[in-house]
Image 1 (spheres, helix red, strand yellow):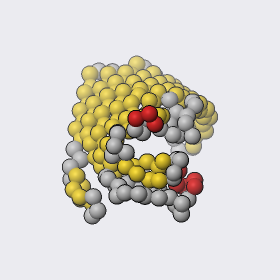
Image 2 (cartoon, one colour):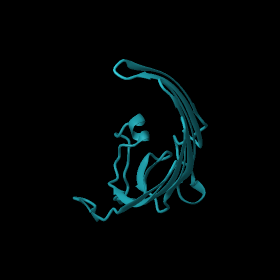
Image 3 (cartoon, one colour):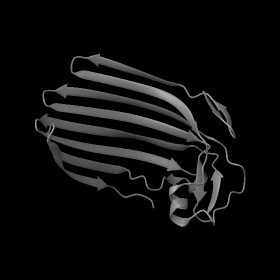
Image 4 (cartoon, one colour):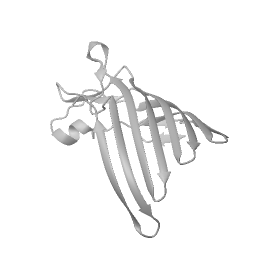
Length: 180
């Protein structure tokens, strides 16, 4: 239970389950929560708060989430796949045309899939990741992709690690097109 001095009391349950069977691990999680709206966003951090307008009282953002991941380990190789879905109801967003902060009547919905593969042969390891995210916000015809959220991203990390000596790594990342 969360009690907020301006927005009231919220129950934020979360349930998770972990199952293991030999080299397989599965995890499922569902939950909800809330967030008090704030004028400090990516847009206002870049443009400043002095021009920002707030025309009506903001509502607390209420979120629901669900995720499912499955991991398989086979010798030096570990593979993980994750499915996720998040809904944020009453999201506080900045209208970029009028520079007004308001609560939207439609939820922001984010869903996607992530894959992670790691191979370890001490003292070396290599990890590759890929994430697909479909995240939409707005109301009616102005509904579109959430800014600064690429649909595709990937990474590759190579690491040499010696306990009590240190580690050296090389990283390369790809970030797909995104709405700015």
